Figure 1 (cartoon, rainbow, N blue to C red):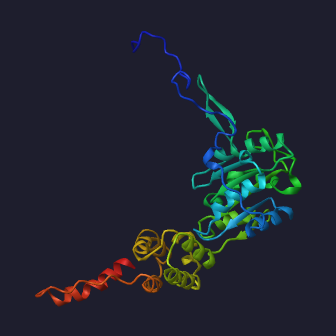
Figure 2 (spheres, rainbow, N blue to C red):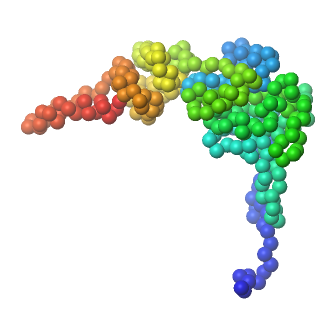
Figure 3 (spheres, helix red, strand yellow):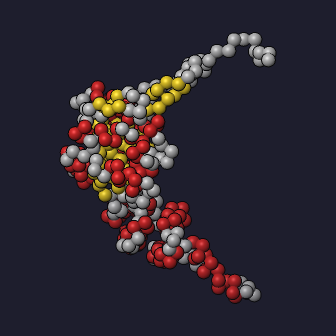
Amino acid sequence: MPSLTANRVRPLSLNDLGIQYENSRHAEQSEESVFEPVSADDEILVEVKAAIAMGFAGVILSGPPGTGKSWYAKRIAQTISGNPDNVRIVQFHASYQYEDFMEGFMPKDGGGFELHKKVFPLLCDDAAELPDETFVLVIDEISRCDVARVFGEALTYMEVDKRGLPCTMASGSLLVVPANLIILATMNPWDKGVDEMDVALERRFAQINMPPSVPALRKILGDNGADGTFVDLVATFFDGVLKIEDDAVHLGHAYFNNCLDETSARRVWDYRLFPFFKKACRLDRDLLQRIRRMWLNVVPEPQQQAPTQGAPNGDVAGQPAVQADQAG
C-alpha cells in the first residue's frame, strides 16, 4: 500500500501543538477552590475536631440534600489545614474506580502505557513531605460508588494505628498513609450503595448528622430580604414536612434559597420542590397530595378566570382539578 505522505510521521507533543498543561500534584487546586474558613466556635467544626481527636480515620457529614454538607466540608477542610494548597477535593460517582483514585495506567509519548499515581497516593506523598502540616482530602458524595473497591488496600491502612505502615498496592508499589492526612466526606444517607459503604467504613469514620434546620431556613430567607410574614409561612411548611415520618421527603433548607415572595416561591416549587417531592413520593401519591396542600398555605392557587358564556360547565369545573393533579 503506498504511503499517504512523503514526510516522515512523528508523534506530536502538547508543546508542539501549543497547548499548556500543568502536570503537578496541585493541578486540581485552583483559585476557585479557596473558601472562607468557618469560625472557631462553629458547632460542626467543633464536632469534626472532636472526632479527629478521638482517633477516627475520617469524618462523614451525613444528611439530606440541601443541608450544607459540601459547603461545610470545603470550608472546614481549609480551616483545619490552615492552607488551601493542602486540601484536595474529589467527587465520587457511579463510574469512579480504583484507577481514578489510587493508581492506573496512562498512555505515554511514543506509545505504550506507564503507571501513574492518582489522587490519594499523590496527597499521601505531599503530606509525608510536610509532616508538621495538616492535609485534608474532601470526598463529596462518598456514597455514590463502591468505596471499598475505590480505596482498595488503603481502606485498612487509613486506620490511625496503621498510619505510617507501608502497604502494597495492586501494582506492587508501596503506599504509606501519613498521620497528618485527614479525610472529610459528605454523604446523602438515601443514596444507593450506602449500606455497602457502611460495612467498610463504619468502624473507621465518624458520622456527624446534618439535619434540615428551621432556624437556618429563617436566617437564609431573612438575610435575602424576605418579608417576615412570608418567612413564617415558608418555615411552617418546612417544619410540617420535617414532621412527616417518611424520611425520604425531608429536604434541606438550601432548597429555599430563592424563595423570597409568592412569585419566586411558585418558581421554586415548579423548578425544585415539586420534582424532589414527586420523586420521593413516587410510591405514595397521597403523601404527595398532602405535601402540596401544605404548600398551598404558602402560595395559594392562582385564581381561575370566570367561564365564558356558553362554555361547557364540565370542562371549566374540571380545569382546577386537572391542574392540581398535574402540579401535585
